[in-house]
Image 1 (tube, rainbow, N blue to C red):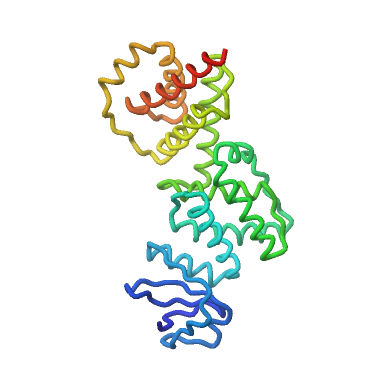
Image 2 (image 1 turned 30 degrees about the horizontal axis):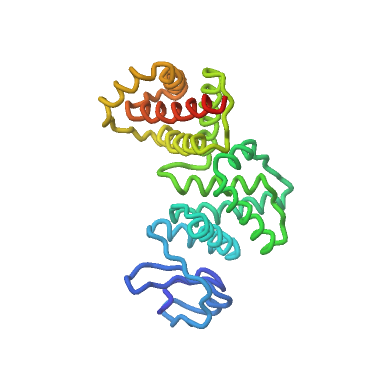
Length: 282
């Protein structure tokens, strides 16, 4: 393979067999190298293939500007999320996380520490992402000697969550988490219940709320397909549906978002499971 761009001493750009640009890193792989020269395969440590050429170019810009150690950490996070936790994340995480790690370490050096106010909620609602975030903090400490702490693990988790969703950012993740908490609060007060957080029904409800809240902030409409089932279930479960109406009224007023029939139906089904479960435990 021939070098088409030298990013720094330890990173270059070349082409894969399909003609796509890839970033190749390794100690000294770009040292005194020029465009067109042959790549020394013996020096290759890691190869980064991004699906989008645009994301690949952004990542190249970051690698030129920051230490390639940060890209290595981002790679470990991506692989841990995908392989160990089975999360479906996008290549954009390479870009956003490399940039975030650089910014976090710059803030630390300047004596600035950001408090993550929703860390307990991220830990509770997104345990897999938070577990990877903790690993990211460990890898940052091993590579730089800097301990960034649990709040930063939650920030890394928020970047992972955002990369799982379409058109969402870490700021949207915070809004989503706040919405999930509000919906749980509405349901808790309306039905005067205590959630059994270890129960299967509760965990399924939380999973549903995560994707439901993501659609709200990405402004993605949900097509109705179950009108007949919806009418029957409302008629049979008027008490449960009163909770759905409370949630729908809040979302309409707060976010100007109207729940579709399907969304209302799924909320109804999940709430019915939780309420039935609660009755069985009494």
